[in-house]
Amino acid sequence: MKCPVCQNELKEFDAGTFQIDICQDGCSGMWFDKGELEKCAAHNKPFPDSLLRMKRSPNVLIDRSKARGCPRCPSNQVMNRVEIDPEINFEIDHCDSCGGYWLDIGELQHMREQHEEMAEISSRLKAFEKRVEEQLKDPTKATRVKAFVKNLF
Image (spheres, rainbow, N blue to C red):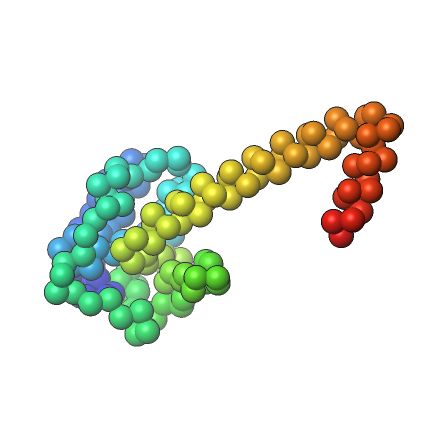
């Protein structure tokens, strides 16, 4: 398969239960076939850190404004950009035809960091909910908690 960014040949990388394709000698982008990115997200540490710290070749420029063809589809189907984080204009490429995803260098690491941040927020929220639930069992504290929550909204 050819890299949709710099047209180098993609090389297979063993990721445990599946393989991804990487542009090792060019832009360092990664191709995930349908379902592989979800498998990656399901694992805490699916790849060696060396993969996450890959460097792109200095002579390769990444132009995010150009439409990219799917490396898997024989017709080189144009991929769509999927917005992951609108605050920082973070997008990845997705092929509607085969269901694969293309990630530019650094995007996998960024997705992992977002996932860890969301897990931390979820954990804190659950702990807060548990404390509120315990407070609601005490009638005097329950009135104060209900007033506090009411003032939030």
